[in-house]
Length: 230
Image (cartoon, rainbow, N blue to C red; front, side):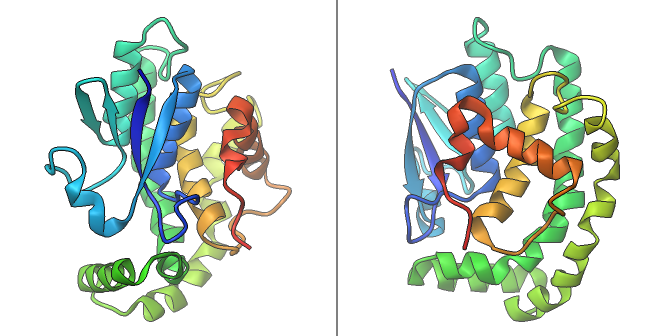
């Protein structure tokens, strides 16, 4: 039975952009599992399945509904143990927990503010109103002001990535010779930037940029199935 993946999209349903949903796309591809994407706008997320959640990704696998990209990855490894592991054991789970926290602070926290207007432009009118109201209430400032202040922070992003860069000089992926869920966590952040904004976030000669290109090529190039923002 094909798994259903509810994933965030804007007015162009062919451009799913959530970093967390991309973690799940890569996880499903890593496991070699068939899935059907079901694009959902921000304002329709509360209506997914049993209406008990406020975020995506969400998957339905038969009679099971699982939320949250990390919980989904754990579920996939537990349910399909005969397929390639996303964690490689308990140590890989612990490592992925670290990378999840690190990516949220070191990457999402830098690029997210700079892309607010780009994301806003991708949305249908009803979602634009929700997005502006909810984000400005949370931040306490206008989207325009946040973007203005955030662009300079993006220029300092490569410096924050030095620990990852040092690892990638020794091995092709964070997971070693092949990718693990830790790779997909960080990949999701850069894929979010790639799809939402033409803003450059990495120098072309950065080892992290080379790693990202390798990730885009994984699993038949599924990461390239959505074109970069122009």
